[in-house]
Length: 436
Image 1 (cartoon, rainbow, N blue to C red):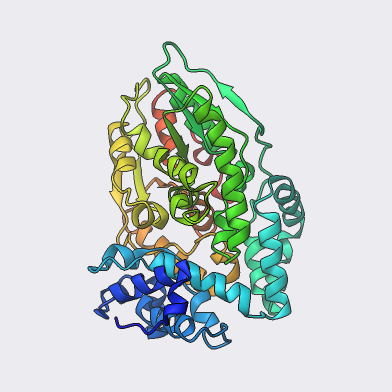
Image 2: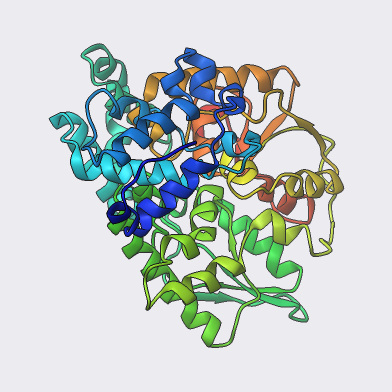
């Protein structure tokens, strides 16, 4: 694609990067076939190719975002399916992230939209505030239909996604969990923000699997990785969170040392693996960011490399494996969870059209509830077609999104692996889906 940036514009490293990305695009349109929003709407402007043209025009002409452009940028899930399909290697993710930052800095949204985004950016990365918000949502959940009827669909979506039961409090702060028997390795495990409040049992399952297989686990006491605010276009807030996270892990790396940094939330894993790019212009953090990114692994990548001791092979349940977009498209990690689940005694089935997003995408299912619901219903129908006993998904957002629309239990793969190797049965298999 031909671009027309001035030399002065190209002095800006972000514009220079955008120019490189835009020039790689050859207009082929392969991306449209795998874009969830284009599949739903058929609107070219809601496809990666259409958004690329909108972003190109905005950046080349140094224009503020407009009311005509913003909805199409907002509807992008950042699922990165287009990047898997693209034959030219267009790094669409970095381009749309830059567009989101420009929208945040140059466009004044309607008051309700501004307030909702500010609330999400403030509350969700803070476990204490988020836990309080879930308590409020627990009591307000019956009001969701009312909010939907009076035109407050995002608030209704937030309440519908809130857990039907209040999750237990997870431990925070720095901790070291010793390996059982001879120590074979030492890893840091991301505690994070949302997952530490909503699904602390997932990390607990990961810790049990790791420690019983000789891996010492360090919880470094880091906070939010920055992923949530990054995808809201709040670039500087995201970088501040990234720096704080890097500092926490570098203390472990430069102390006793760690083999890997493990993540059970694939959305966080994608962002952390991109720290080197995000902080490339920071002279104090660039090298440390690259170091942290190089050590980061999804839990499935690490578990797949160690010889799991299967004490009680899992029941021969049929597992529908949902690959989160941030895992299959963002991190290019696809088969590891399926292989380990199969070795653990489960019958693993792929979901038809598994490359298409479930509609979670961080805060997307709250900010774009109609699009998210359509994608979720499509995903659930495809899952139902393989008649599973349980659904496995490696991202808390996907688990929450899918569980809100089906009675089939939804768990993280590590919970099933834990069960098969001597741990407890996953809670979702022991209680009604409505209580998840």
